[in-house]
Amino acid sequence: MKAITLDNITKTYDKGKVLAVDKASFELEQGETFGLIGPDGAGKTSIFRVLTTLLLPDGGNATVAGYDVVKQYELIRNCIGYMPGRFSLYQDLTVEENLNFFATIFNTSIEENYELIKDIYVQIEPFKTRRAGKLSGGMKQKLALCCALIHKPVVLFLDEPTTGVDAVSRVEFWEMLKRLKYQGITILVSTPYMDEAALCDRIALIEGGKILSIDSPANTVKKYPGKLFAVKSANMHRLLHDLRDYEGTRSCFTFGDSMHLSFKQDSDNAVSTLTNYLTGKGQQQLEITEIPAGIEDYFIRITEKQNEQHSHTS
Image (cartoon, rainbow, N blue to C red; front, side, top):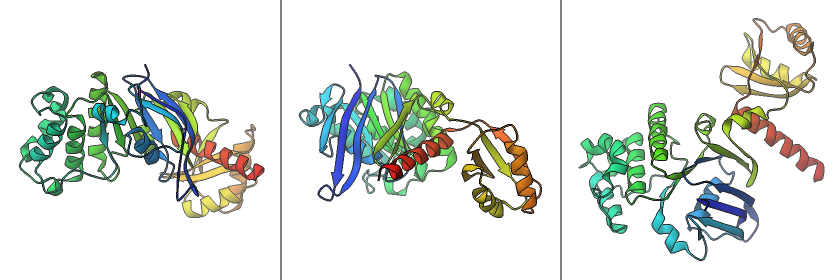
């Protein structure tokens, strides 16, 4: 039995005028960590709300732990944990009161499932009498995860759990997820961070409500067609304009401290021709280095291809 199945799920808003999810399909194996990767507005949260039975789909079918999201929503709610993007616990309750409250809802106790949350809870236990609203972003995140796990869910839904959290807390959070995976919990996580995508077993890239690709992170980057180059110069602002004006450029965008560039055609003299062009434009201290593509590079490339196909058909 699959932990999650989506079969042509469609979701619209504003009486059908806004298409949020466009015939999305994917499956999760039990014990898998699966990432839903895409920018804000891509449809990630709508998919989460359908799977956690908070929204009814307008078309298609979906199951969680073998239960139908429409017909068996009560059974699903008893066996899942859900951590929405926005902190949604009771701000006026203490850490301990929030945990006890959620445990009581599911007819369990902190003690009963303590082994499951122990690694996380020991970090927030010193603040157990502090009100949740007074916690730091990282501590709020850990409390929310504890509350989502307190009833030992079969499937854990994490909707952009690290957005707005500092880099150290993000790393700690993913270490916690790794330990949960070893306990057999299936995790569906959405994130706009491509470095987090690389930590999943498989990822689905989503844009405009459409699933564009599903594969392991390693296989995803292998699909990048052609060569990719990192380009630097003394004048990075002008470099971007010069590269985009260059007739041989297929794609160019800012990435950290360099520009990521792909050519329309990968020829033996492509780099030397570009160097001559940029030198002629007055660019100095040029560095052009071939690099391996990352998930973000592939995502941009596949999105461009999607837009090109759309413009040809419209």
